[in-house]
Length: 482
Image (cartoon, rainbow, N blue to C red; front, side):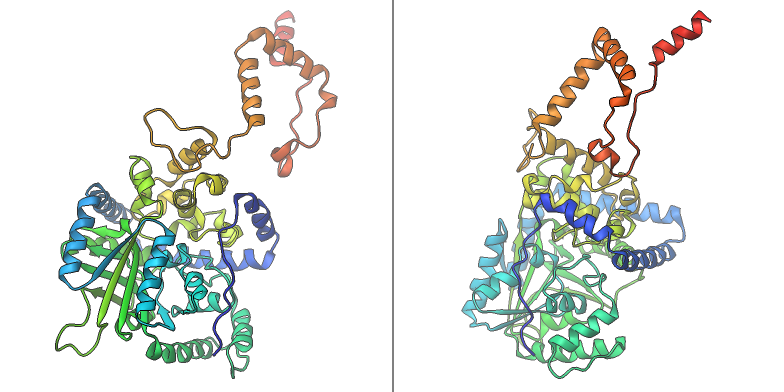
């Protein structure tokens, strides 16, 4: 099989979001596909939580666990490093995407690596590891079936749990027939899965390094927890001689007993499953006498803007996320435009509050505005992240300079506009000066015929605003005279 197409995939600038979302809205097929998929996932999740009171108790417990872990994050990270080191794991710290890629490339080059097989890892997508590896001649092959499909087509995932949810079986069938040598066109889902598995099985056996993500890292025991359904995560972490795990610094919890409440909510919120097919607990490389497992193991802990969120008490709740995708499935905006319109690794509501810390508000200030603030995302979040409140906060930070006593955000004030400031200054002057307000009212009513038919964004989906023939004060005065 030829290597998957590798295109330069960077986030889409904020200026492109409106164009891409408009294109997505005009794509009736895409909207129909997403609507059906999201309705299916919403139904499966609802079936897993028949008792609202029990669900709220579970959400409250999960929120407390995540807040407790974040409150002790610096200490837990140091404890995790000690226990992992004692377990024979090499721990690396990456401040940004460049650091993470450099660390992994160094490990790969020390082992003369030609092929790396990857389990599902959103952090590796976040740092664009595949393209960094390709630049130095190392093939990185995604082994999660959805990730494999989008990589084969040169795309980014459109959903953090189901990367290829935007594709139909006909599109996948054509993709396999075009890109996988010796494969005939078939729309049989079982045959398509079999084709993918056959390709990947061969790669597992020949790869020098396997890479995985981490769902939870337990500081007390040095255990890395990996949630999956396909078994590819287990293959990546046991068959190659070297295993590299990569994760964000926020994924740490203190004790193993903190994992089951989070795991139970993660699987049911993400895919509507009571439990996933595989739940891997990894505590180190192969030990003497063991017959499988890697001979060498590494963990790369990535910051990449997370400490910016952490240092602000309100924004810290962003880091509670367990990457279930429930907020996306319930979001009326995401379900209409899909993940690619956002142009970032993490789309939907969670991406709107995470991406500004990773990429800066100068590149992402438009994303927090891509929300109706209906509150659905906050209502379904299993760890009770107040997403609507954080969206409002980031909208404010995008428009204003740093507040005294509050740590500034990277790119703060990027959405600030001299025209908008002037409009609001004029509005304030008008509404705080009675004489000026009355004069404006008189002029607006007498010259209402000159009201423009196009009123910026307002008339994209609404009728133009037009002043009444007389002001309220004039109408009340006329009534009194009668």
